[in-house]
Length: 271
Ligand code: ATR
Image (cartoon, rainbow, N blue to C red; front, top):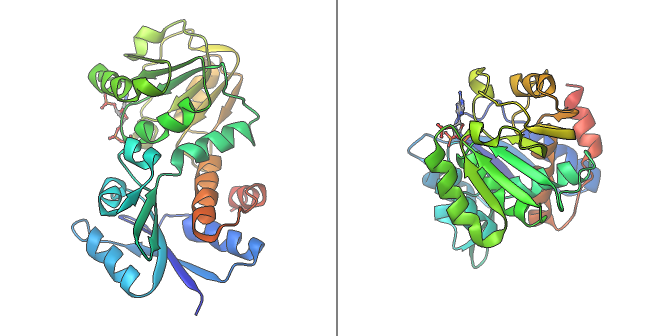
């Protein structure tokens, strides 16, 4: 029987992960299956245990279980611990290994497909929830000149700044505090796009040539992408590339093989 993997979440039917991992497996000739599992909101740990007992080798974890997933792990990576969440589990003989590949997925999409070298750049993250926390350490590891965190509730941005202060140059504040900040990269890690709400962005956020990146993706440009272009962003991108890159990193953690992401991106865009 081929090795079994799955993505687990609630809801789960919208997930593109089965499609992505099937494409990776075909491309690399790996014998494996990958399914989607809907766990009840109060039944995450039991669903993971059942999949593992049935011979499962690993799982991707999506909303709302990423924090709980970290709690199940005997062997969490540092970046997962700092993110406070795991999106990848591997069932090893000596326990559950957990990682968070979201941040490295974002960095790979930026440096690869979008050609943005982060070293020495000014970066702004909008939002201070789980999505923001999950990507801060991998961003800091690229040595930006500054990583600023702007949030509607300033105390949450301040808390993230304090948590990650040992790892790089950080600033925190409300959106208005960064007016005229001229950032090379502005990342939307808020959930505002999901609710269709526009952000209260001040003028002067974008440096000449700046990239605006929305961690959310959709069939057309997100509200943030449209807003950013109007405010002077030279280039805009949605989070589909991050989705594919985080999946590639999970695939590598399980199979030891790095799939090519560009053909899978192209396939998803055409659906
Ligand atoms: P996630 O795990 O997706 O990050 P979360 O932890 O609920 O979700 O965080 C949502 C983030 O989006 C928060 O930073 C939130 O700002 P607050 O901390 O001030 O609530 C932000 N957010 C959601 N809707 C927003 C809106 N309309 N304008 C500005 N920020 C918004």
